[in-house]
Length: 132
Image (tube, rainbow, N blue to C red; front, side, top):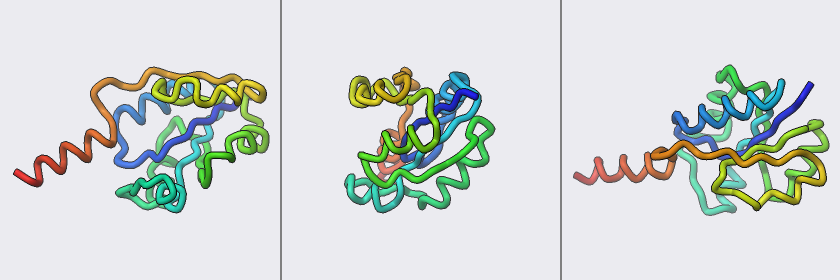
């Protein structure tokens, strides 16, 4: 069985999220999704609209996702790859080169992001509509 892993906050789920999950799953047989915990988001200076538990529940309902685990720190990726017997690590192309150190442990693939959509853009658009 070929196992794939990807990481993200996955807040305000949108078509870009679905696209990367679908494409990541197509690279293997089993997809593990590591989502940033609320505490890790706070360390990064981010605040998700949905709690970790809600984001986990939403992702678990998506047919491409086989398992959801928490991401608690930047350093855990090597451990996750080893503990979950990961063959392929997938991230959006905006992270290109940042995780090449994982090539010692698995294949690293950077997928193009879906143009014109992001959680940041959604939040900005919603804030603009509210202030009108």
